[in-house]
Image 1 (cartoon, rainbow, N blue to C red):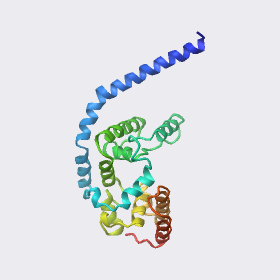
Image 2 (image 1 turned 180 degrees about the vertical axis):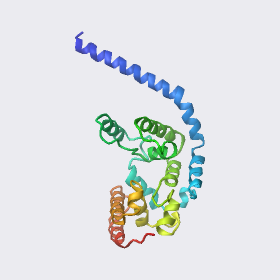
Image 3 (image 1 turned 30 degrees about the vertical axis):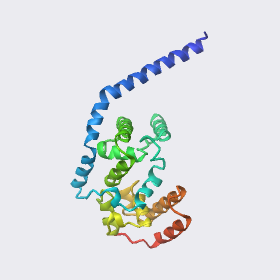
Image 4 (image 1 turned 90 degrees about the horizontal axis):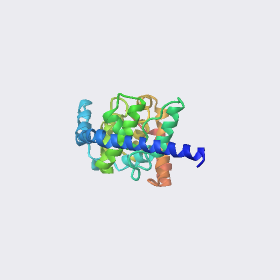
Length: 238
């Protein structure tokens, strides 16, 4: 057996031991703690909203365009991924190891986990824990439950937490009455809510991107895209 093959075998054995150790740690030490927290996750979301004087709304009381805009712009593989995105995870690891700007949580489930449990923390450890929490969240809750909590949890700028508060703040309406263009506008805010809240031209550009992403996912027709892109020029926000 050549030295090269021996090195490969040794490295493989070491990696296997590391994987087994990490796996054991996760399921023997972390899993009980995470599962205990997830038992009260819906309540935690509601309590956080109450602190911000906002109201929790169920998914069936949110305009049908809002979840479509969220999935198209934030997590196009939401219904098929396990809560994390492998490509995004590898990209985040690469940027971290090469001392470049760290990439934030990518999937809707990761964003939900970060907002609920690690909102004030931003480091490699919490990035890893966020992804771990996202996996457990996907196991415990349905995709519809995750989407509902996410839409009630995210920040839209102007002290508006949750989609219902955002609808009232920006358009003086309820979450159930949001139009397609209004939904695209609000979901376009969430990547940089404080900035887009006061820079309306850039916010409109983001909304146009959301509309294009919705068309790309076949959530809307070409006619709807063209009509709503045109209406963005005259959209009125408060």
